[in-house]
Image (tube, rainbow, N blue to C red):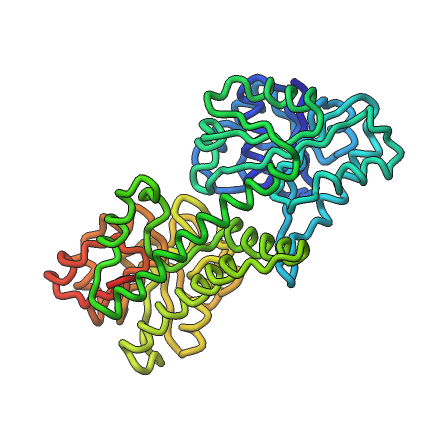
Amino acid sequence: MQISVIGTGYVGLVHGVVLADLGNDVICVDNNPEKLAKLRAGKSPIYEEGLEDLIQRTLASGRLKISDSVAEATRNSEIIFIAVGTPAMPDGSPDLRAVHAVATEIGKNITKHTVVVNKSTVPVGSGDLVANILREQGLDDSLFHVVSNPEFLREGSAVWDTQNPDRIVIGARNPEAAEKLKQLYASFECPIIVTDVESAELIKYASNCFLATKISFINAFSRLCELCGGNVADVAYGMGLDDRIGPKFLGAGLGWGGSCFPKDTAGMISTAERLGYDFSLLKAAVQVNDEQIRHFYDRIEARFGDLRGKTIGLLGLAFKPNTDDIRYAKSLDLIKWLSEAGAKIQTYDPAAMDAVRELYPDITYCDGPYPVAEGADALVLVTEWGIFKSLDFEKVGSLMREKVMFDGRRVLNREKLQALGFEVFAVGA
């Protein structure tokens, strides 16, 4: 099929490249010259396992083309995916200006029947919004159909998730448009759900908001465990064995970050208010999440009393492992508060240091985890990269001024560390 994907962020780029690798002719469009130059050179602008190899392979095959022209892409496509960013506005509502601009440009250039697909995470009602924008450009309804096709990929495993989806959701008012998308995805062995546009738009938000609430729930129990002497890992394990609950997303930690959960919870709360519903349950989940990282920092401060002149090593900066994304990363909160308290900060992350350096150029960036430990009064495990789980902690302890460890992700062996003379503080223990 002739496909275009407008926007080359995590969603758009991965989606477009995977579709090209499946044999479709795909045009990926962006308006960022630096990003376009990298893509044309076969370089990935984002850190994502396997993505750069796919870009190079599909460029070499001629199946993938890179363009800065929405007009060109529209004229040469039967399906167009809108995959631009929809960041949160100050009031929490999604910023749809990029969607509006792209839809306007698409509407000016449609000359044959085209299926226009909302791939971006957009609030309920956005399908009608895009359809009305197309009509405002003088298009007759016979020339287009608007479909909602939300994504469910995870950063750090975006290529795998796109190639191996657990479900595909298609929201359409027109059966022929839905069938077109079903044909595009025919090679995927997963359930394909065809529903109305509004339900498809809500499925994406409902999924992310539920997972965010599940994380906040176990984090709330981690606070109880700290107060009563319980072990939140055992609580989560016991809960997860109930097949009505399941074990996924029950890992207590520093709270959720990244591009999806913060934006989507805020967007759903805003949408609910617009529709006249006070989503108090979701608001509580957000409150728990906001409090979790502050509580963790307060434990660091309580241990030392005065942090002035103390050297704190942060292991990890990205919001999760296997990505360089620092959007809503908990490391940023810790850096801010530690700096304000007068602490010296040294850190290492395999992928995210360049991004953080732009925000905090004055902290010390190390070339590995062991230099982070040198002279440190405490180490804080912030991101659960695999490299941090397999460190020689006897060596780590010998490099530190004080053997104090704060495990923000509950991935370290507490008993082993204590046997080595570490004082260990972990979430939920």
